[in-house]
Image 1 (cartoon, rainbow, N blue to C red):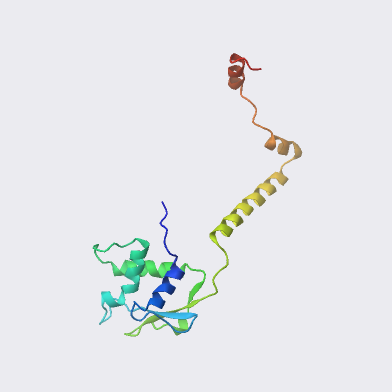
Image 2: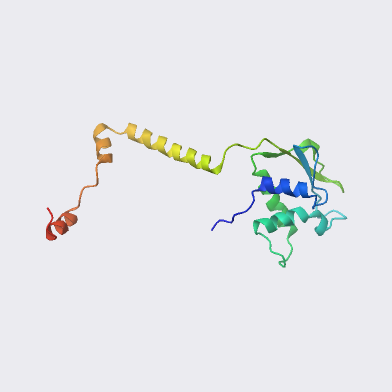
Length: 166
């Protein structure tokens, strides 16, 4: 059964607005930075430096309080989720990869007007077009066969006769 949860873009916007995670902030109204320290570096603290990744893992159900912490997996899952978003892109030339101030900077692109319903409609339309192409490739007699009800088998005919039908 699918989990009903907030999608990543609104979730991250909510996290930025809440100021609950140290270092997660707007640079302007389209760009934001995420602290991205490497865990092997001196001074890395899980509660501070993996907080956003842990919150995402909790939100997605990948981590439950009381489980053994797994910041490496939390960060990898968060990174993959961010990379899969069509309306958020990393601004690599503004990101800082090393040191105590390591951050990744992302830009929010205009939200895509496509909804899930529209995506389903496009798939349905694609299916109908494919079906139409298939029908057009058939000869007239093949097309007729395609639309006729299935012929009754001999067993079905015998059974019908036994019940008094023709």
